[in-house]
Length: 145
Image (cartoon, rainbow, N blue to C red):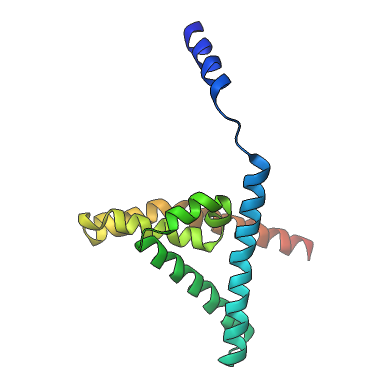
């Protein structure tokens, strides 16, 4: 037991400290850029396609998810998320990447046992927590207003 503790301390002394501030700023800038790009799409759809703003925003999110799926299929989203960190994994583009990468990885196992089940394994937690939080916020809104 003492040997493991000594080993961990020796290894820790040689490990570089992660640049937390730089990584946080990078994630903030990239996440903000993704959101700004989505807003640009929404404004473009609203103005040039004469769509209501809500429909344009929904289409803009779908466009960003589509782009993330295409980049995942091309093998470029992993490099992007490695650079951007949480700025690329927290927005809806990260959710689309998680589902698409699971589908691509397990496509040889078939549609049901491979693609569908693995997509739900990787995206299921986000869906469940999203539903639970929406339910709790709905109750809170009902109580407060």
